[in-house]
Amino acid sequence: MKGQILISDSLSAESIKEGLKTERFGQEVTYLPSTASTNLVAKKHAQQGAPEGSLIITDYQTQGRGRLERRWWSPPGENLLFSLIFRPPFKITHTFRLTVVSSLAVAETIRQETGLEASIKWPNDVYIKGKKVSGILSELGVKDEQLQYVTVGIGINVNSNPSINPEIQDIATSISMELGQSFPRLRLLKVILELIEHYYHLLKKGDFSSLKKTWDSLSLIKGKRVTVVSGGHLQEGIAESIDKEGFLILRNYSGRRSRIISADVSLSLV
Ligand code: BTN
Image (cartoon, rainbow, N blue to C red):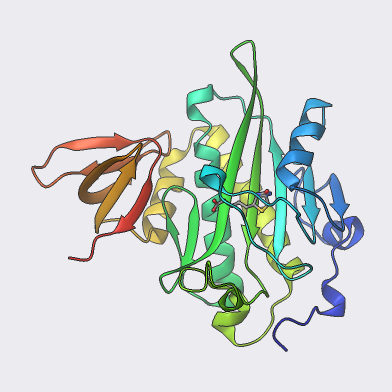
């Protein structure tokens, strides 16, 4: 079963929109069998005025990108690779909250639909049993110091087998690897779009406390000892929670709190 594409699981604008319970997210779909990177296509569409909620999705990326210029590995037709266009009414400094919204939606969907214990590892990863199953790459479009759009690119290892790739075999997993059988991508995608719309709505209403509560319950690192590396600088402490901007609150071992804006976080061994 593993690695096989389900016939009913083929991606198209029609199959995605069928039965989708959203107002905006995923109602405008661009499906490309293959492309360099959905984030690049989303950026172009956003610059041409595509509406909020537009979805760009593909079966294969030739230049799939991760954070910090890393490559995003995904064999053809096995996983979810998509980008969404947001036009948030926020200040530029608040846009990181969209990564919070998206990671919540991904982790919660995986839990709800597969029963697997997915957790969020700040800033933008979703993990199952200590291995990464999904990553998020958000990019901003700014003009005259005003935020024009944000493209949120989401990659989820659904039916791939990361153990065949020596570069990621020790750190990555997929839903099918964890379940022992393949899983329909369309089902996951629709629930993710619905939850993103729901959480984004809460965010725009100013209800960050509901988001924070869910984030706390799904966090892999909350209350744990972590090592935080940012710009070559290393800090250790307890990961407390996130603040209103979605930044991490770290309490060091002398009790001093700091806000972590961007970093690689790992669980400390002791
Ligand atoms: C990361 O973990 O570093 C982020 C990975 C983001 C990958 C997704 S796949 C869809 C979209 N297009 C890209 O080129 N990257 C994102």
